[in-house]
Image 1 (cartoon, rainbow over the protein chains, first blue to last red):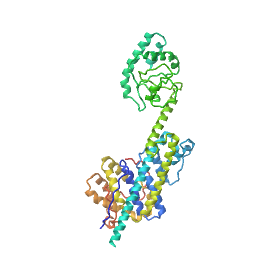
Image 2: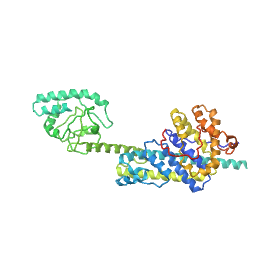
Image 3: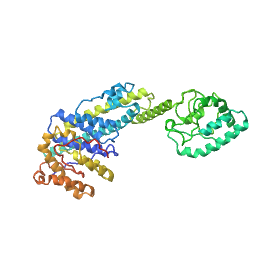
Image 4: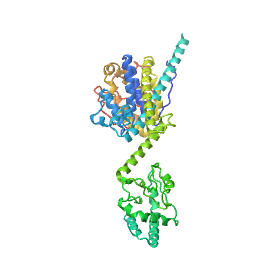
Length: 147
Length: 321
């Protein structure tokens, strides 16, 4: 009955399939909800960061920070002692979750990891969107033909 | 170390014989250390050892003349013996004739160091300290730190596209920040897009999973660890969807596990069967009733999806593969 073409997308990061897996699983769960658009939007975004963080190696501070924020649903609480550090890496610190309380060396390490995962996440999402669009287009065509 | 200092002491007597003797002894020792040092090479090290040459005399004379000075500095002339170097001075220290701020590439320093002083042919392994600079552990640690930072910046330069021309740290930082911001914006944008396309997609998304999951499944180790993750899934966002889930979640989960079981029977992987059992038990009662509710969900995934118990606590931060 179902003659839809199933597309499989390539894993943008073959070394880390878990990121894709987590994200897709969360996404499928979100899809099933009938929440309004903006809530879904936010939930997807949170799922993206969560899948990134969950597939990160556990000694990465940013992943813990991300999960902490997502879980507590607070908007970036900054621990008190961390605000003392002001140097040229301030902007990067603010960008990176949990970056406030790190020294420069560690900050750069975390940035590397964060950038890698962000990139993978973006590629993944892009691929999903693309393939979903393709499927939708095929679907419409098919329906038109049936009619 | 003590041997070196001992060598330096007789050096103050200006007899060539003693110098030669000392030099020969030192060379012998260093040749024996060479092999050890090569093994113990650190990433930044470049142990330079040249064959014996008569210019060693000059070397030693130089050392002689400055030995008293150097001794006062507390070991700046310390030659690096791999086993005795402590962690504070783990890198090579090289005596530079010119107090220049040349890069930390030690191989280069060997070439450039001899300009301001009598030609110092390096024929033994140097422990380097910048001339005229403090050789205490602080500056060394500082140097190590700076090198580490530059190493990471180089790696980031490779990661961030279009950074090849930028050389300064500040410029690199700006690029990195821009890149991270753009990536984050892209995530936002794509999540919006996904939210729009979602409602009428019929969850073809599940078809994406096999590829990814096959990658996870094929090596045995990730498979096992994936299972632990599944057993303790960390669905923080199940909370807002909880009410939703109670109505349709069970159906979904049932369907998933139903499909999973169906497919696991045909799957070659036997690992998952063990994980199917818990889900089997949980949903055994409601399978038949709900298996047709969501027939679009063709879940080709081979991994079992546990349904979440309702009061699920998402405190599991240890999520490693």
